[in-house]
Length: 124
Image (cartoon, rainbow, N blue to C red; front, side):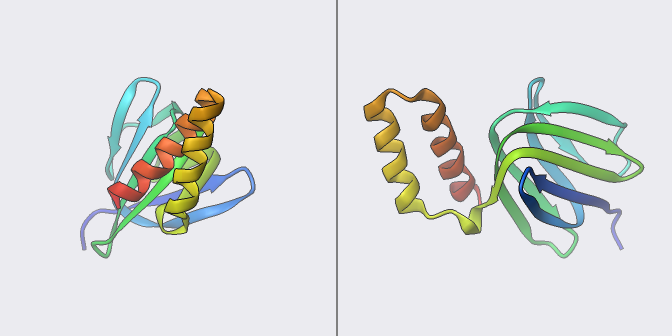
């Protein structure tokens, strides 16, 4: 069996995903980071962006994450997000409408959130 790390992706309102993985890629304030089993301990601030999790069974889980923290120690990775949703849960047509509304209103924050959600869907 390949080396694994235990991953917990938690949003403020729910546990989004939990399981074993071989690689997790996330965006931090220091740039994109890939975490594999045996990685050095870390604590960082998550930027809005897609998080990609390569599961132990060879699958891929992608989530849109909006802010939060990432920590890794003892082969346990925690992603504590302000907002997170799996790409499978995202309604693309609704997000495209929200993006257009945000652009029309000049709401850059809402525009960024919609963009991250669309990128998560494209990544899966």
